[in-house]
Length: 307
Image (cartoon, rainbow, N blue to C red; front, side, top):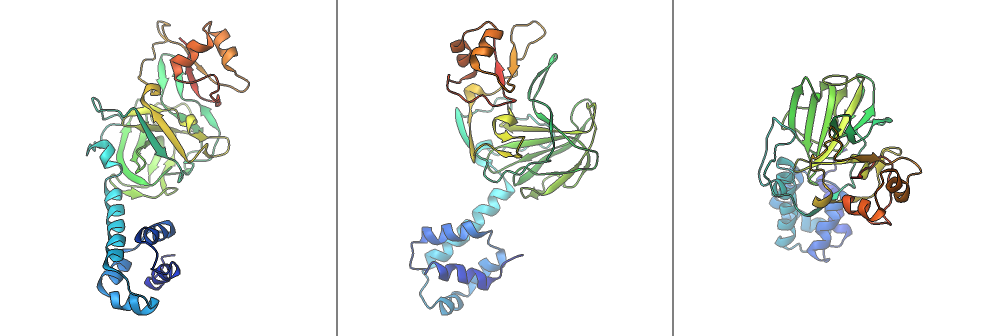
């Protein structure tokens, strides 16, 4: 339910308005979005606000609140625009060739919502002569798929030999998420969505052998293993944030056809020593190839390069 202007006055009164502007800013920010109507109340009738809280409000407080609102509106219109440098392509998933990838980038995962609660049927990693860039989650045709984070619909397309009907959403945290093999769209291209909002119905379109959701996570076009961030068994993230590292990003170098590169998908009971023994490499070499250490936690579903 949308809060009224009176509630906003109450929020400001609750922190006594004698607090620093930053405190007011943080308190209101943590409560909810401020509506344009409330901004109008604050900016056009300051005397009313003063009468209600019986204290003097500096103009800087109002200006700070208005700036917060304007910043949020801009972020909704162009999510992560600073990271993507204004690039917006509504045709392709990976539309950022030649772009500079940051060495590291912290991704906020705190608002994550599971797109569909189902069992994983296929992991990120090599699949025959191809590389599978997402995680497949079981669903039935017509099941509701929701947005993993708030954001904006960048791509709404059909690909007969691949994703089928699919969507790409860009999010303020820098991620782009891909939802493939859909049967029906519930959102339009360019539409802003909230985390958990229904965006499509599941299906079996495109290159698919059974109804499921193909779910990808990308940063500037670089595929990230969703299992590095998401605990698919419990339908939540492992942590509130994830640090993307360029050195560990997938570089599309899978060449299983000639056997020059091999990968291993971590399963229950795997250890570095067991994996190293299986692929006849040293543990140190295994660590170097994957940018990890001997103490790194091996999460089920993660793909390790072994040669």
